[in-house]
Length: 418
Ligand code: EPZ
Image (cartoon, rainbow, N blue to C red; front, side, top):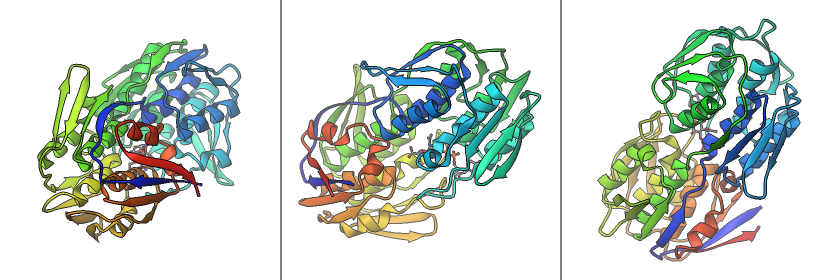
């Protein structure tokens, strides 16, 4: 296992290029199985989860490879309906192959993804929506076995909750279904808009994506296409916080500012300066930062994937603030690790109360999940001294070359083997 060793206390200064979005690329790569011609996808980040998805596509019978130039080319020429547990358990997003497999093959066998560190993460809403479209499911030895012998048909689906993955699975299932599907209370995340735009580029007929009512008119087939994945708004938000927590100044290239309204609004409330200048976004913290109150919500609310990162910033800001986690039931595992660095945080159910301190102190801390690991790296950048973040494999799932990007703007950070 790898770990990061960080000598903090140095204001960052320089330019960082934001990579392609993990949470847009994952569904888009799996959606490529809906096309019966080759698909070329660009701006796909080099991440462990992307490698896992390319491996899964291979197991599903696709020709899927990343070319030297970085594009991923996929041809679902000989699709097979099975996604095995030992791969699904390493990446929950594998469940997003359920919709496409049912749409193309009328059958699917996908291991039921277990929970993960941040929560149980059931897929009941995915299955309920697909059943409305004519699919039938059984659970066999831990696998979701789905079938729709008469094919999928359009349906009017009202989601109990704007589930991101559920909305994505249902859109992918609906693009080849017979008739129109309406998804009400759909998730509105920018990654869903990106998925829909990719499918439209392949010939799908989708409207309303990005709003809470998405309409899909089924078509007989999807053609191939070339598509560029959107930049990663959570990676960008993480580096906005890096500028603030080190009291530095960063210029972000390819920063999807419009997809970060709730994050930039909160960081500005805390006292950061964030503004677009030409084709870069400049983020800096010149004066003191003030804690604020944050509640994570579905988009366009404050994203749960930025909760741990803004908590790190608040630990070294003035005053006190509350952070309420409104999406996942167990997404505070970074709290005890931040307290090991000297942060003052108390938990009451789904709310953390953060009282800012003058400075954090270095320690050995343990990453528990993707965004918690980013939070601990951010805190380490603020520590006057040495911080060691263990189990960095969590970070490698979702941040492309983080230590290289941070070192290039002045951070003293190195990766070591445990
Ligand atoms: C996506 O997960 C993202 N992952 C997550 O990012 C992100 O935190 C989450 O959306 C919320 O924005 C990808 O896009 C690959 P949900 P997803 O379905 O689709 C409950 C990261 O750090 N729920 O919107 O799994 C669920 O338990 C990752 O990049 C059901 O109860 O999220 C959760 O409490 C972490 N039944 C809530 O809804 C269902 O059928 C939101 O889940 C589906 C979801």
